[in-house]
Image (cartoon, rainbow, N blue to C red; front, side, top):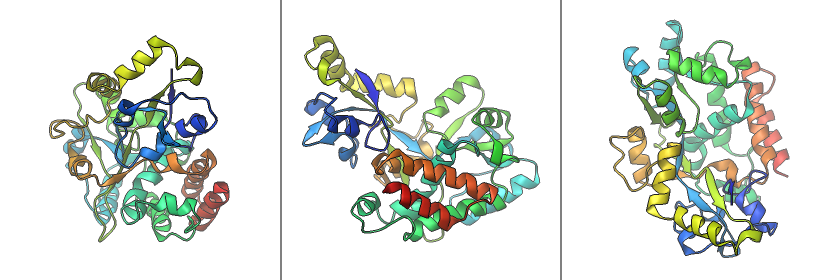
Length: 325
């Protein structure tokens, strides 16, 4: 048994390995763990090749304790977000801390913003890109997403020195209160809580542009797969079967800080995004269905270029389209 990543976007992705004939097909119980709309990320040729492990919401993790102390209510619209950023910057704080030198973090931020700009309007955008019906460069929502990042930088939404910041800046800034939120997987809220038991952390969705609707990105970041050579191993098969049960799913969700599906979210860190989750207003992590890992690399590196002024929005989108091919 080993961990895989749903979809095809990474080298250890479930469907990629399944198509290579390396995974054993699993049964109906595994299929029932797949979040709605994510079937193509776990299945190939009518078979299921991964047990979905928990649901992660991709937005930002907010230090609610710090926000309340600063008199800040998380904005629900884009104009309010930029205004709040300016106010915080004038007081020596930032709304967000971003590991600007790390493409995985800059890419994650861009995807979280794209939820309301691209996928709320066209949930099937990835399929349209795969069939050649559209491109990144021809999609206004992707242009808006990257232009919004440029506007965030100008408004002081990020900490000073964001261009050279690494992952260490995220933990230190959020825990010390110099930044209110970070673009990190929702499961990180439980990790931060362990480091600072006296502080509260909640999951927030990026607000939509004017006239847009609340929408998010959520999906299983992890899957449990079985090697084709281990399909006749009773112990391995029994463990995979247990992972599909409610007890197995709860154990993982608690350990990883994943979203407890089927439970009341009002008293959990997911309370701010409860309506989005309960209404099904979300799509799976976009890059898990992109043609290859290079597309996400181009996005992350491109956002770095936007922060330093070395790239334009059009150049970043053109790089992503080139990487898709």
